[in-house]
Length: 341
Image (cartoon, rainbow, N blue to C red; front, side, top):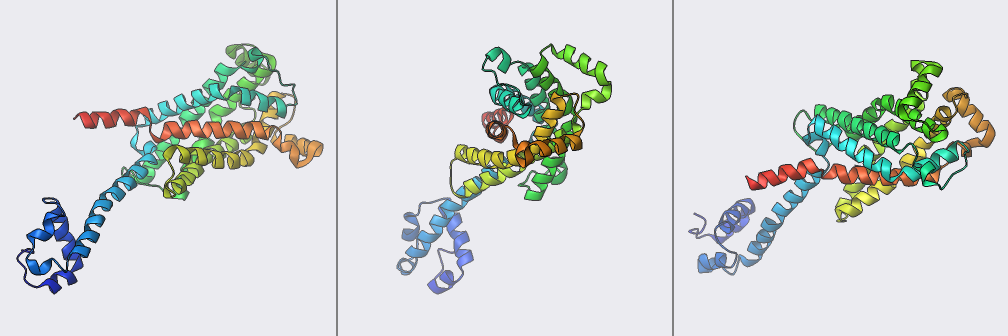
């Protein structure tokens, strides 16, 4: 009906209808054949409008695809099953623990004022316990955070608000403080005194009973809560800013990991220092007594012993978690299956 019109001014005034008809025509013919198909009186008046609308038609699907891919990249935990989230977290945590074991050992030695040894047999002592600890913790955080995010979106994956991301991450981190306390207490005791994993657990239980296995729970749970907020809440926000600046996804992950890692290390390091002292020295008091003694001895600086090593460790952790979490193996397999079908 549009091609048979005789009134050029009426067609040009109705921009929305013209855009619709250009869309429909461009699906069946090229831009160059479009003006030649019009009556001769249309040709002088339409080239500029056709060019603008044709450019808009080409860019709109690209913008929609970019928006959808960006949303999908930050909604991975919403789309995976609970078991897949847990398995993804376990794998990422175990890889991170093995990769950063020298930094973890150095940080613990500085915090406890123990001489740092460069002997690999000592430096990597307790690595299995560390891998078990971090794998369990990150697996629990991925699982709980994914579960909470699914409750928030009610089965319709979407881009979460900052408050929703931070809230679900904090609760997931706090919940992981329960296994964190037992596993890291075992790791630190192994690093200091040696022994096997079962033997260390038996020694701790015989000393103080079941409560002895949860020594340092308060600082551990708070540290893990803010740690999870760092890589599940703050880092994605920095990555979104990098996306808006048209940076590559890898550069965005690196920038988000470094920025959130340094900040998160500063917020959580006092808790980590107190926890390491409480779990390394079974003779010292609880959190308040340890904090008072630490402040009386070294002031505020005492709470930041080993900060450079831990900040570097956390930046590496966040990078590994975010690289694995943005495009995990499960999503790639599902995408390939859809393409095959």
